[in-house]
Amino acid sequence: MRVRVGGRLNERGATLAVVAVCLMALLGMMALAIDIGMLYKTRADAQRAADGAALAGASVFIDFAGPGVDTAGEAHRRAIAVATHNTMFTSVIDSTEVFPQYIPDSFRYRVKIRRGNVPTWFARLLGRDGVPVAASAMAEATNAGVAKCVKPFALPDYWQDPDDDINGNNWPDINGQQGGKGGETWTYNPPSAGPDHYRRFQDNDPNNTGIETGLGSNFRNTTLLPNASGTPVKYFQDEGRQLAIKVSNPLAAAAAGNFYPWQMPGAGPGGAAYRHNIATCNPTPVAISDTFNADTTGAGRNLSKPGNMIGPTKQGLDSLIAEDPNAHWVEDPPDANGYTNGHIAGSSFADPMDSPRVMLVPLSDPAYIGNGRHEIKFNNMALMFLEPFDNQHQSVIARFVRFATGTSTGPVTGSLIKTLRLVQ
Image (cartoon, rainbow, N blue to C red; front, side, top):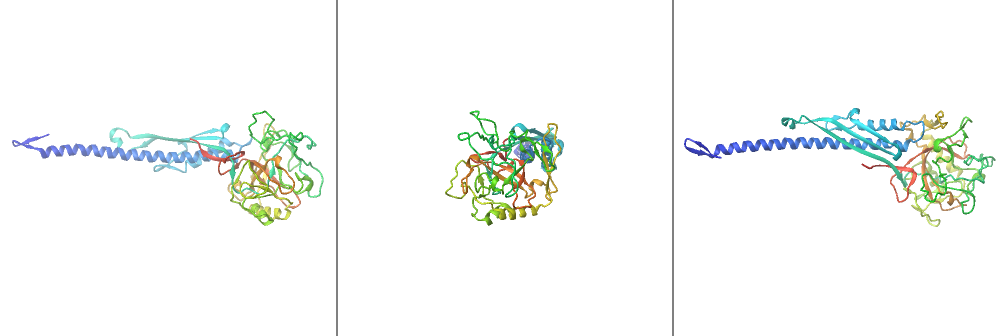
């Protein structure tokens, strides 16, 4: 473009006009780029908050899972608490911007975070004062097969034992103290050798071999057992039920010399190592595996420990109880279906599930029960709350809490050991 001034063409003015137009366009693109960058940052903030909230909500599938527990309400509380501690760009997320969804059938929890109007800076010059921004995430409590801080008790999982179950309540009633009488002593006779039947909780059953009998199943839902007050009660899927994680009476031993202690991977064979693994966290990962070897030790090679280990057991458990001495189990009143559950009260920990008395106990396949030092195989792991332990000649009694937290899925998984992961 040329401008004629005084009979001459003035190209300088034309250049200025073009530069001005280009500068305006450039400034417009820069302004939009700034707005777009701000919106991307805002959405990234929303996604991070949604991820954390979804994981927090799904954590209830590990910590709680029984009747009478408002797991949906607790999941929403956890999710909203996490979400509202985050910001989207410069402002805190409000609870009205959090849209949770509880999906119990698949142990999933979804969270959507949406802000309807994120103000723009420069796009308003083009008529856009604000833009909606949203993000969503879904977390899942999925079956795992590896865990850490496992305690050195190899509790045989529960089976159906018609010939040893004297009172027919589908539960191995606990014997008295060492040398005492009473209770029942179960010996596992697999279907190939006897009438007993075992199937772990949530196992696949393609051949329709029978119902699940393992801990956490519905097998004992109608079983009435006296609680601490002597009142017969029943527990849904065993939650809150008392059980012996280490027996002391030789008459109650599953096999000669088998009182449930086991030599953990990475630990020595002596009583000091056994006591230490009770009182502290053994960081060696323990995996549910199909292969075990009675002639070697180490990770993946688990052996039962023969002997009653009375002294080291008492010393290790005393250390645990001393860290949270006032914690105790409170049974809740039965629900409309007659099931009772309970909760931990009096703990010195803000979250009672963090108490050292909440222990991760592996469940061994009853087919591997043997005399003396014998190979074992784990099918599951469960959380147990340690009851008071005053007499070293007593069985160690704990309450079955339910799901345990694992560290990874592993090649083989158990239904009672779960890990959290984002799936969307």
